Image (tube, rainbow, N blue to C red; front, side, top):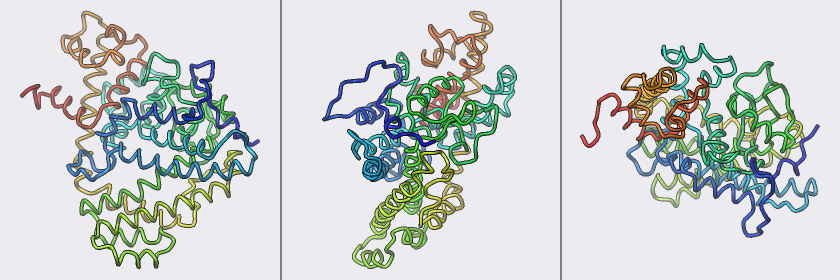
Length: 452
């Protein structure tokens, strides 16, 4: 059974029983975008790693600039798809820019849950729970479903938690974004632990919400008309395919551009990777003859490549729309576009030459120590205080004042429930910027002192 576009574009907001009045100058989906832009969690992305951690170059992308670029690509993709979907299905009172605004907002938030030090931060948190005595002791006292939330710690699930709970925590639904935007945001509409295997496909490779947030996602999925597949897993929102494509377009193409600027890749290597993506290599080569500097030649190729792949991804979505609406489409759009092989070459280059380069690996290796140290200190502290109260160790009674009350517990009394107590600390640590995590770790370990 197909999902229905009218439900998929739901303007309902979790926690609000009445829809907000229509405003032709500023739609509900544009409000979503604005709420994300003005959130503190989004601002922190300016000091979070994209690929090159704590880079000293002001040219290289951070998570913030990457998210803005992905959002721009997503808006174009969404509007192009929306124009054809509206015509194909005869949708009323819906406009191409509505599709574009939903995808743009979801793209803007797509990395909002990433911990410090990029994807290695996710690995560091998982590793700490797996290998540390404190982490293992926590896991032994949890249910299997709760254990999997930590063993498979996931930035996507953390992002869902930020926008629906941690940001504006006094509201049910947190930022109270529309269900359409929340559905498009959730690329992996499943919990970490499932009682039965979900169907195969890209939508279930990772997970998109914690056990603590499962009821809220079920509420959103019901509003959108997403089909439940097995307990704890739902069909993917069709626009999530566009969010995924926009992210992949940007990081694959732009990461090699950044690597060129840092002299990790030669001009000829990047040129030869980007030219096949333009769809008109001869014309692009002719144009480059009139561009003087190599930097600007690469920027020109990057722009042409992004434009060409956006067009291919849009056409691919429309070609497979029926399968996407029924949940039968199981691949990434970029894996089935005409330029799929050239896009895979970019991904291979990133994995084999860029992400393993010395500047990246050196700082990411330090990230394992920093995040492990912070988790050890703060989880030990809150567990000690929960068990012993005023008789907890002096160190635990001191460290609790370094944890914001939102994560420490009301009155800085940690939650009685172990799962929620530990989840609150992972909320705190994963929300840190790279610089703040490093600075706090140095202070906790005595490597540096305040004003020292």
